[in-house]
Image (tube, rainbow, N blue to C red; front, side, top):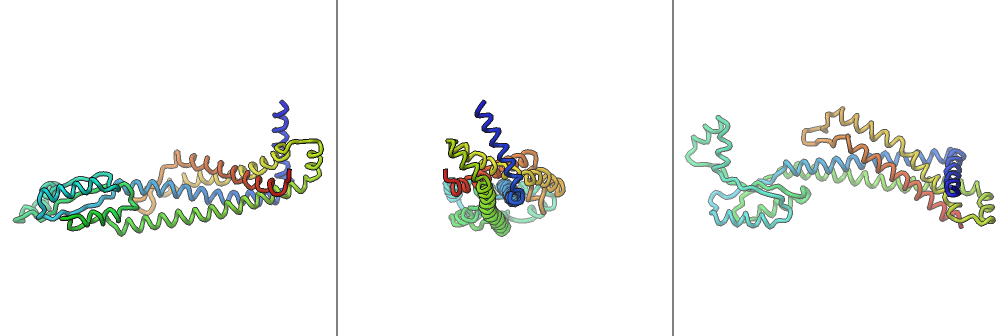
Length: 296
């Protein structure tokens, strides 16, 4: 029961201190909220970028065109080399006759192909990759194989998308780290003011033999409370803002190729991360102040 009373008193002291230093507390809460909004954006962007990348990997293929004069042994050699490449998930060999047969399903193309003396189509290897960021390197390796005359995979679009996604993700990361540091600093200053205002009470507690953990606990709880209050707006914006955006754009951004992750599970995962980050940042800022300004 004594422990419960102590914990209850610590929570009361923490909440009283938040309202006692209202202006500083609101500055800390505001900075925490801004930070967590950016954290939320960064997480949502990261989840969607990873999802889009996976979607592109599923539909994007490298098409390697084989020389029509290649012998069966040379084709088997290409097959053997492809099986050894690390970034290749799977591949399929399509003969020129099979490709012609598939194209002949269209009546117009069928008439054109039948009017030709020889089949002009080249046999191909259709390759799926594991990591889209390594697709250029993989395509170059395939292109250098004997009897592979050309390789196509939409390199211009892929490179632009990957570069754009990396820039966005890195910019979000830098902004989030910077604001987390500023937030921890502001919360630390708020706790420092609290410590100073309660210096006489702390001195008495020391004289009567109160343990260090009991003295420090209210300040740590105060930091956690400030971080938790700062989570409210970012969590609401994450839940309702992302759901509104998803419904507004119909789950797609700019093109059918960029499909957003459904909000059903994503918003709750991100919200949980925001709460954890908010509390940890608050406690970290508080711990920094306690260690530096409270010599117990």
